[in-house]
Every structure is written in C-alpha cells, then in structure tokens.
Image (cartoon, rainbow, N blue to C red; front, top):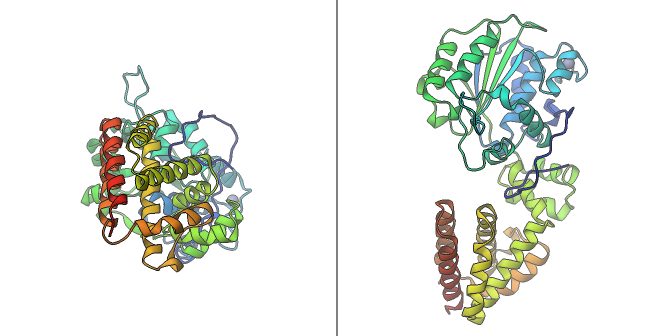
Length: 401
Ligand SMILES: [Zn+2]
C-alpha cells in the first residue's frame, strides 16, 4: 500500500484500473452513523442535498462514496452494496455514468480556459484509490501538480454540472453529484450551485463534503441536510493500524490515541515509527538538544544551515515533530508517563532528556517552535528563521529551573 505522506516529493505515477474500497464495511469506524445513512436509503428518505462535515482525516469522503455506491447498487443486501453489479463495478472505478465528481482544480500551465474537474478525473481516480478515499488537500494538489497554488471550483464547472444533469440517467433512476471541498467554489459557481439546490432536480442527489462549512453561503447551508461526521473512534483506528498499516499492538495502541480521530494522523504516526523521515527528524531533534545543553554555538549554526536547506514541507514536518517531542518530554517530567505517546528510541531519549523541559521553559519552547512554523509558512528566510530558532532553543534548554 502506498501512502502519500506529508512532505513526500516522489514521482507521481499513474496506474490504471485501480478500484477504490467504498462499501460501508470498508469505511473506518462510524458504526452508528453508517447505520443511520443506510437506513435513510433503505427507507427511501434520501434528502436531495446533504452536507458531510468534518476533517478529511475523519473519513468524510469515504462515507459519502459509500453512501452513493449503496444508493446506486441494484442488488443491495445486508446493509451493503453487492460490489459486483454493473453499477457497483463502475462506482468502484469512479466511472459511473450517473455519478459526477467536482473538486478544486488549477489551470494547467499554458492554458487560457478555466479548468473543470473532468480534466483531472484520472488523477482523482488514482488519488481516491491509492488513499482509500481519505487524503489531505495537500495530497490532492500535489497530484494535479498544483504545488503551492490554491485550487478552485470554477464557474465553468457549475455550467458543466447543469449540462451533465440535463441528460437522462443512464443506468438506474438516480443521479449523484459529489462535491469535494465546496468551500473552494468561486462565488459565481457557488451562486450557480445555489440555484440548482433551490429548485431540486428530480432524483438528483448532491453530496457536499466539506471541512470548512463556515465559509459556505448561508443559503447553501440552509438548503442542505447536515451530516456531522465526528472523529473516528479510537478502537476503530487501533484495529485499522494493526490490520491494514502493519503496526504492532503497542504502536497501534499509542498511534490510535495520538491520532485524535484522524486516519491521516494515524498513517503519518505509524509511518513515522520506522520511516526515513521520522529517523531524520529524530536525528535532527536529538542533535539540536545535545548541542543545546552542550552550548556548542558553532555546531548550532551548522545545524541551522542544514535545516534551512531542507525545503519547506520537510521543515514543517520537523517542527511539528519537535513540538510533539517537547510536549511528550514535558509529560514525562510532570510524571504523566501513563498518557505519554512515545515508544522505542523516542521514549529512551525523552526519558533522559525530560528533566531539561519543565515549567520554567516549556511554554517558551513551544512558542519558539510555533513561531518558526509560522515563519516557514509565510516563506520567511529559512537561514534566518532556523538560526534564530536554534539559538533561542539552546538558550531555553540551557536555562536552569
Ligand atoms: Zn451492486
């Protein structure tokens, strides 16, 4: 299994004929919610516009896709789509003629016409399949070559939706439109969508999957039924970590607690348990701390230069990692080992290092890391940011209580 991890800059390879897992039983956790959604369909109470709200990592898109597959399946049984009827097969390859997808896109280099989702449908199929329909905005933008550009759902896209919906349903009776990240709609696109929602089309279902519904037009929200997708239950994450991510029992236990209800966090944490990135971050962190309490200024400058040359995503990944270890070390100092999220080398190092992080400096340390994160996010000069960071941290670590 391939996960696109934060900071991963590998080549984007395209493989055809992948299928996505989209049955309710393949959605991680959310048993009660799944039951409710199934029932809506079984009892024929499908409201024409629904807003799935929650973080990407909570499986909002997984749930929306499972819902659509179940709705369109011609042979549902036991609360699941059959998985083998023509509708299911098409849905699993995200190629169902009556199911349309809308997501943020960017204008390809050199193009003068506004893009629509169809232009990136191959990437969409690939990313959904590779990530089991659970991925970050960053992963999506990387897949469509957007780098730092912000994607948008264009006005032309709204015209496209209307054009597609004006055809008769090919297979069954329903047509569905899944809009991932409706918060990225251009104002004119949002107004066009609103018009559609105001005068519902017969047997047409709109599923909006949003992380930030607060930026949607109030009028859109009031015309949709909200489906609040909460955090994924810890137990579901734990079992997913051992079953699918290959974590050991001990790792899964800790990772599920640390993941805060998010599959995206869970994958990152489990991968960090043994990945090159985690080893690099661990090495950078321990070196910074050793130099700090050894007060080795020249070496600190060298450290800062190395980090400054790493690239923004890696720098962010390191700083987030450092934030976690500082917090965890403080927990150890405060005698809260039982709620600590450390294992292996990290635990061994932090147990020794913990006395250096205490009440007198923990807040200032956290503030320095957060400040560096902000500066990196705002494209600050990396050399200046990390030189300042290394010196400030070193002073705080060398400080006695
Ligand atoms: Zn089926």
